[in-house]
Amino acid sequence: MQENTHALQTTSGHTVLTSPSKAAQIAGFSYLLTTAIVVFSEFAINGRLNVQNNAVETARNILAHESLFRLAIVCQLMYCVGTIVLLSALYVILKPVDHFLALIGAFWRLIYALSWAFIALNFFTALRLLSGADYLHVFEADRLQALAKIFLSGFDAYYVGLLFWSLGSTICAWLWFKSSYVPRVLSVFGVVSSAWCIACTLIFLIFPNFSNVVNAWWFDSPMAIFELALSFWLLFKGIRTLRPILP
Image (cartoon, one colour):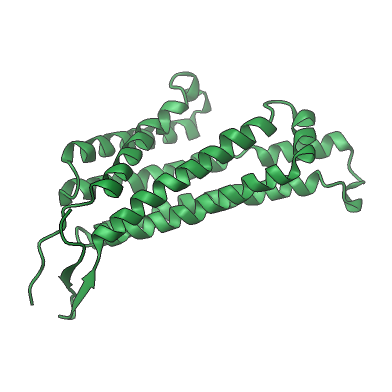
């Protein structure tokens, strides 16, 4: 890994010090950590509590393990925050390559991060519907359970967010390719896998039965593999920094 700090000349003629190597470590660590958090939340907790096509059993599980369910919500919010940290670090790294594209990529990732805040709010709404509060007694229990089940289905919000994640990932992969910060074969794989995710998500949003043709796991798995590999590279290998611009 080369020097952690180099000089960049701003449009106003001033020279500022940045640390893309430190930002690369932050990006790699934040992605790996937040991925572990969201996998724990969605598979270890929600995968056990949220029973497919069974609102009654799902409600019973949540009420019996409310603290665990709330932990899953906190994990979703932590994932949202971690994604914002990640996009900020990526912006610092890729801004010297193309300021405008780096900004657009960060903005699209921000929309993806906010989709997880929306999912967390829906989970809180589901919990409120199952709380047994007095003002809910005008509704039958089975109706409240069905409504809660609707709010617990975060697939719509996820796939809308996934579109913006894949758009942001495509831009970042292209900037990685232009910069030569990381091996170009990795960048090319990132461009292809992210573009694939864009295509699959768009088709799925228009034609939901598309998941019968291409399993939904294959929409984002290649892109996730790219970002995991990139994160390990950034964390342990770092980046080749740009040549300093001398005053």
